[in-house]
Image (tube, rainbow, N blue to C red; front, side, top):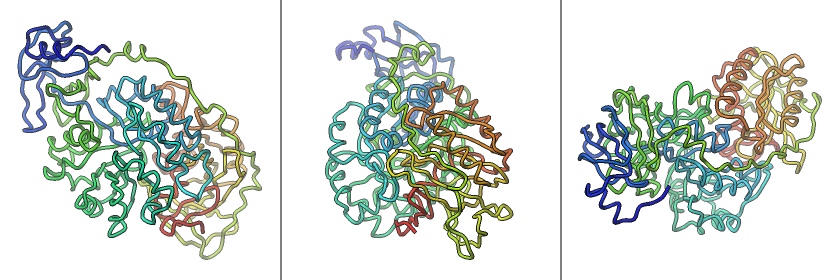
Length: 562
């Protein structure tokens, strides 16, 4: 949109000229005092220029007495894990009041490298919401897996000055930081004067001190109050997460207070369109937090002004003159957080506004290069009285390192133990590993995914080898996606041909496919609410305690293959 001159902006603020847009008759929620005050809101271009006064405007929106709050800020997420292209994500989430979102595209970067970063920045330049991009710091995430690409500091630096680039993304290789690995040091030094996101689950003591000494400033992997308070006391901002798999909100509610609210924010770190439709997005987190007793003023601060200041976005997070005109109008009470209308950068959000965006061509449409597999490839390699088994914890991406007695097949349905495999899909090594996992509830069939954080090799779990092979091979035919099989048949599938991560369907179409997939998983006996995303986190070797990659089982505490 066009930007008025400063003289025009000042004249509109003073009421000497009509504002470009006036939202009349709202109750403005003041994030300083917590009061609600009836007022008009005047907007010039993409900026708020007037509050606590009456204004005339070239265009007027009747607020109808609704509550006006600043647009919400999702401080850490991955578009790819929504299974949507960025422009569809925009259309899915912006109506929930999320006007700024901070994206680490390391999923697509681990598949496509610099091409994935360029795609992310191009899309961010076209969305209605202000989509900011953190440049992916860990591609590959570790040396314990086979990734599709590698990005060193020199590869990232050309993107640093892009107007949508905000900083260096989550530094997952915390052992590399603590032990001063040369590639980690090169990236940290290159961003020494910029924002660096953290990722350090359960890190404490002098190891945490070492990590923070590198000027890493945030963490979204904190799962309990004791861990959170140590990090807060050491100057780290905590991004409270509630995604489709990782659900930490309720555990971290005790840390929200007047004293801590400037150093806390909310993030989703991945919420799929089915869960957005069923529950909501950041609006859901706000409702849940308030319902559990957190004061509304503190909660809305986390979603807005605190998030903005933690990330240096000093032009947003309040409804006040000079701030970016990102506004959510709420139907009903603050506690309900029901978003009725959204203003993003001074523009009322409408279907026509989405339709006017510049399209961005998809990339990575032929990225699935995995070899075909047979049932014989899934023969168990570990069994006996003291076999390492991955223990799934529902609602968490942290897994348990179990030691169990297993039969030669690696499957014990009476103990809720099935088989698990990861197959390299980037056409590099053709490597594959097989192990066992506890906690899915499957009695038959298989579930396969090309979404496998962070290197995105094929991950498949199943109760028999033939259905596992069928599911894995079908992913190759689809060029990525989710597949459910049983008794030699494909029961449900969703194609994700954009780098094997994102669908070309609209978000309504993806939501419908996910509903069918979820139901198909239940027919196998699956007891997990989000089995596909749970599968996707099994090969993530930077999250404790036991994980699997195409190279084998990983003891995350020791950071080595076992």
